[in-house]
Length: 261
Image 1 (cartoon, helix red, strand yellow):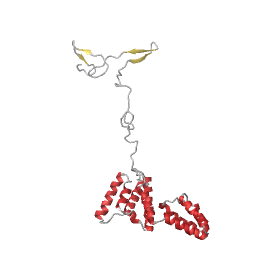
Image 2 (cartoon, one colour):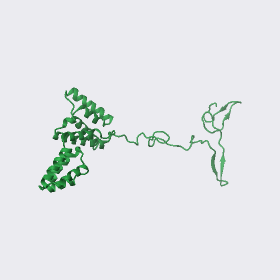
Image 3 (cartoon, helix red, strand yellow):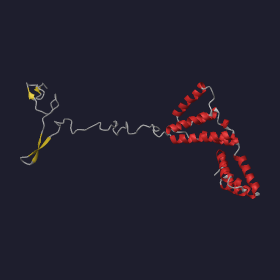
Image 4 (cartoon, helix red, strand yellow):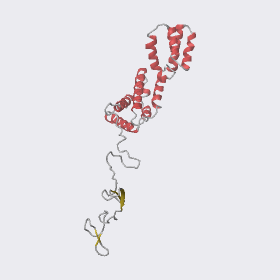
């Protein structure tokens, strides 16, 4: 379908020539197909030729189609505008970069055929298209442009930029090494702010495995009930629960370490 956008004119006319005109020599049938595969204002324009004598109607329809939408400068302007006004491409967005690469190839091929490649082959248009790239790719293109200007000693062309984007898009979709994003599971922090490392931390049931700082409950087999025994206070030297051996009025001895407490 052709909606009147000059950027789509060239491909539409090529399809019309190869799929319709190559199949029938009847100009009336050609005109009906031309009306059928257009829409909007261009559809109304083509339909206005149905009242003419059949051979002259189709010829006039093709003339109007080329005059309104198929002039070389109109095609070039529309194609460049599509490239410039496209949305910015996010970093590592391989799908968007691939679409840009295809659009650049389509633009280059059409403008070469209609003789208007110089419309896009200029620094101003290239700069505006380059601004759509993410910052890392813009930096990479700056290095490439500097190499062309200083080492190769020639002008930068639209073909150079299209080739650069195509190479970057191909790299991003490499079947083995295309995805270079970090694994979100590595270095992720839990709700308490500590780094999540599998098997890194273990918990114990108390601060002193042998001497928990709680009342010790043991079953009494003689009476069939549980008897609670209160543990001695902690030794300030060894931090264990035991009775301090007294030595003098103000000195105690740690019964485990044999030192003064």
